[in-house]
Length: 131
Image (cartoon, rainbow, N blue to C red; front, side, top):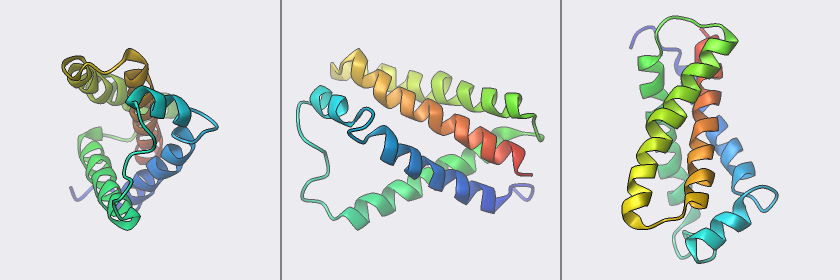
C-alpha cells in the first residue's frame, strides 16, 4: 500500500461522482434508469448528505482496492484497458448475475454496468498514469 498515490485515489473516487451526475442525469440515462426501476429517483426520504457520504466512501474503497491491484505504471491504453477489464469483467458481470436473479432488465444492466465500466476506465487512467 506504500506505493499507492492517495491523492490519485481521492481524485479517482471524485471522478465517479462527476461521471454519475452526468450518466444518471436526464441528459443521458436518468429517465431510462427511472423507467427501468419502475419509479422515480431512488433515495427519496433519505438525507442526501448520508447518501452522498456513504456513496463516496464506497467510491474510495473501490478506488483504493483498484489502486492496490493495479500494479506497475502503465501507458494510457494499458491503464484504460485495465479499468475496462475490471469494470466490465468484474463489476458489470457481477451486477449481471444479481440482475438475472432479481428479474431486472437487460437495459437497466446496460445502464448500471456501463456506468461502472466507464468509472473503472477513469480509475485506470487517473490511478495508472498518476504515479
